[in-house]
Length: 92
Image (cartoon, rainbow, N blue to C red; front, side, top):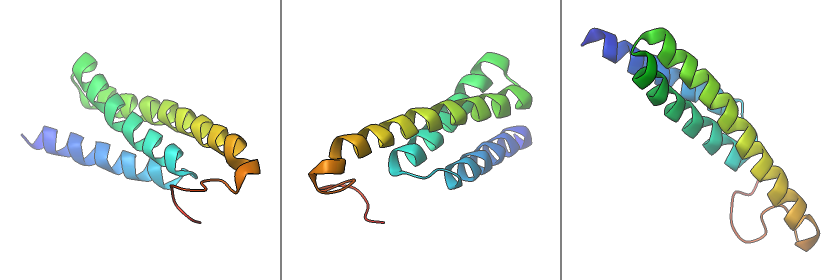
């Protein structure tokens, strides 16, 4: 029981740490979702702490890159039409 609590706490810490480094809104969601998905998949495959943490790290990096590409695509698509997120999304 204690091991699962520590794994959950470690995965949550990794998600928050990786999400804090992200820049755009899609990048943040991608990092957080990728880290959670990677942790779940890593734990299902390996069944130990090292595979869970490794899966969270790899999933976070992949999710970060996918989200960054989406932010870049949105920026390029909406740049000449009134801003980065003209009708929806955050205002920085």
